[in-house]
Length: 533
Image 1 (spheres, rainbow, N blue to C red):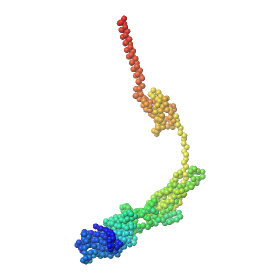
Image 2: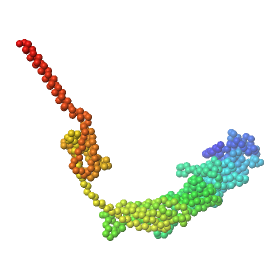
Image 3: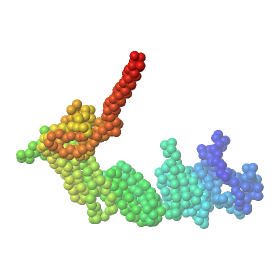
Image 4: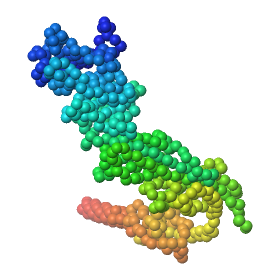
């Protein structure tokens, strides 16, 4: 357990104050028998060490009545780490040094065994790691892994000027480590916490320095220029294809850290694509140069004067064409370029002067396409090397008017009759063309006819009327005479037709019945009169 306190206004305490407590399950045999922990106090350049019992009471060390040991470490104490049993202490200081204090069982005191200069700025954290390692972070953002071997503190992570560790650029970095292969460091940057994670398969870390040189080739000559904003380097493990690092390329010279091995470097230039290289990273330091050239392509789009006996539409005038869409599509990367280039297609729009400028890879050929509303498209190819000024003359599109044949309509008369050849008024007539589209619809006049105007062709005529079965007939236009469509009556209509005849028969029967009834009555009256006389 580690306890870190920051008491205020204590008498005798100087500009810096560190108080830390370590408790141990096992401890050196020469410690006082009641001592189970260690209190460490840092005041300015001095470290005060107290062996204490479980109640934090100091125990006598070295000589009777001596309860504290004072060690001068030359500058303010900033961090303390301890081995699991308290036999070794590691003191970080404001001067960037780490002191190794070891318990001497003969003298019963801590002695300085070794020192290591990690940085010129203050040590922010010292951590003791399993396996005999220290993790040291400093205020400048440096991380160093230190091996505890024999009587030496041996730095492991190499930079360009020796074993100066990893430069993260995170000011005030504080590191925590779980094992030498899993390390997390954090810092507060602009009110935000930033974390730096190292997950290593081995402890080798190599600084990779990259120098990128870009040459811009223009019709006026060549010039060196800074990397485009947003440029970056993506690093992939060559064996697994795993992305292991993404490095912003904000300057022409930058660096980062990798473990030794084989990698694929993909250098990205915004809008243009990638340069890809296979590299092998190994000690003591790997340096890589990425050199390439971009060439200027100026496209000028205009309307040329009309040729002899040629006229333009009234809205077209000669001169620059604004808002023309210009596209460059990569065709071939020349093998002599010496780089694996993955170029992107590019698109631009001309300004009022009819011009648009591109920067493209030198050593890559392109197809050029120009499109503008009202003009014929233009296509050409751009060679692989050197700057280019390309004049594009766009001819206006002249639409030829196609003479149209006037449409001729024919008069068609359709007559609807019933099964007795009598005209049907109010019948619905619908005519469909060969595409089954309705082209005419109407109802018949009292004479049973409708008149339609139709183009030449074949049609289908469908007729329906109340009380009759619908009928469909074919029609070919033009035709002679009129088209007669006969509708058959429904059963209900046929029954209605019999009602008058039934009524006549009923009437005749009634008359006959009345006649016979009257005749019988008269006969009876006559017979009665004869009997009277």
